[in-house]
Image 1: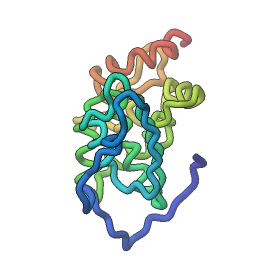
Image 2 (image 1 turned 180 degrees about the vertical axis):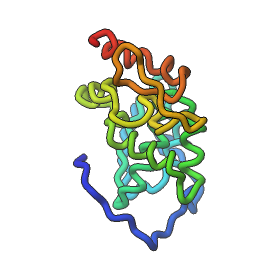
Image 3 (image 1 turned 60 degrees about the vertical axis):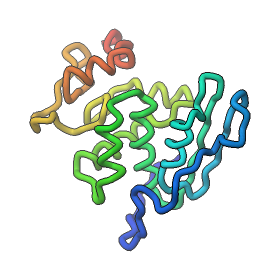
Length: 185
């Protein structure tokens, strides 16, 4: 996906939590079959989350979702919602404000920017994994926020001097990814 400037549509009919009931995409599939799902005009991620919640992601099934939408803001929001869940982070802290707040705060906007430009949402390519392990120029390397909860500057890794974190907890959670970069410093 090429990154390019986009124009925000001012008069958009936005349904942050959707206007239809969520459905499970794997209801009609046997549990032993993998599911490759293409979602055109995907809008919100309710159906993806409901599919996973409903047992669509059993131990024996691989789920692969490909999402497309005409609005770049929708793809950015969905990336921010799904990336922390895939990373097993504190998903509620990130996902709930992005899903239910309209408009989002500056911190959430910074998180959207950090998540969509860092390559962390794309796990299938080795290049994306390399990008994900390299320090980001701005924001907490783990969660993307721009400052600590108290509004103070981010804490820098004392060894690499490039990785920044909003808290010791984020630094601990990111250690496995940051370890290689830190050892090379």
